[in-house]
Image (cartoon, rainbow, N blue to C red; front, top):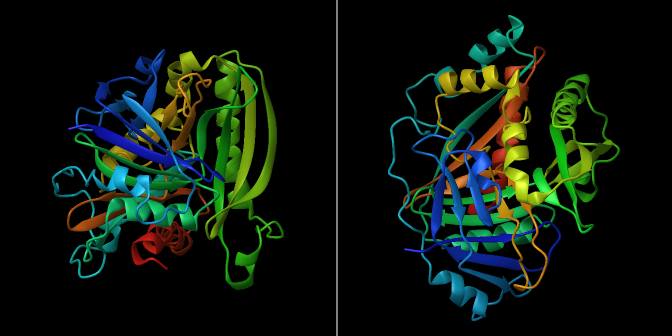
Amino acid sequence: MSSFAIFRLPHANHCTLIEGEVQTLSSLTDLNGRQGFVIAPFVVTEETPILLIEQKRSTPLQTLPVREGSRYIKVVSARKVLSPLPYREGTGESLEGSEKSLDSLYPFSTFHSALLAGHFQKLVLARCAIEPNDVSVEPITLFERACEHYPRMFIALVSTPQSGTWLTATPEVLLESLPQPGLMRTIALAGTMRLHDDELDGEGLHLRWSTKNIQEQRYVASYIADTLKRLGIDYEEEGPRTVRAANLVHLRSDFTFGYDSTHAGNLLEALHPTPAVCGLPKKEAQAFILQNEPTPRQYYSGFMGPLHLPLTTHHSPPVTHLYVSLRCMQIEDDCYRLYAGGGLLRDSTFDKEWQETEAKMETMRQIINHQ
């Protein structure tokens, strides 16, 4: 069965459907010279390989929002959710009614103790919550709701036999090409505050950031700068500045540089995962997360998007738009698995970090509940 990805870029009024066969890759450097829609995991394993939907057909679709009876509805509704990954014990469960302790589902103390002991500068702790799928809602309907709710974000619905079906609404660019030929961009996005009441009418530019949030974002920016320098890439850095994503605001710095996108795999291998989703030092933090997080992240906190693809016509220049897979959920027959995480530093507290994950999960809960 053919796999598909349908996505809408931030602030765009149209979306693109990509269909084709899936290639399985074992290394990000294998993406060099490739074209297609990439679905990459947090860590590459036999169960969660890098997936590349090779472009058999790319269809620009009409302006959003979409009306019933349009070609867009007919094209995508014909592709029901593909068979999801079978449920595996330990892939996440709801806190409500659980007999397990809170710490076993969200081991804040384990992560925080490692920070206090000086083993890490930063660690990202993620969790999974299950929402019941009580009403039969087509995944494409969830995609449409996400496009309507979150115009600033990259929205993508992807489905392959290997990954199952995922929906993401993410603000974080990992790597993208710019309109100027030969220029690319990555960003350092970290630090989180929630908007309340009248604040939701603005962009959050008046909010004051805590030292913890500033430091967390600086870790990510410094890591990106050091990575680009190590690769001999000259760059320009702008920021940090406050940017809004749904009901949250973050600190963002932009890095612009010249680079050949046909060699994007080399750069992705060096960048991913950034401290925004992993920690510092990188390799040790990733190993600690894999050992101590109770929920396998799978494709959460990986990345996805078109790689070196012409999106409008076969004669249009190829573009790259790869986004970190945040604010996402896996869609299964009887439930939705929501994922969220937050960056922990030495001065982090349980209550604030828990509330941050709740605020991030609200992005997908609003889509499910159609609020």
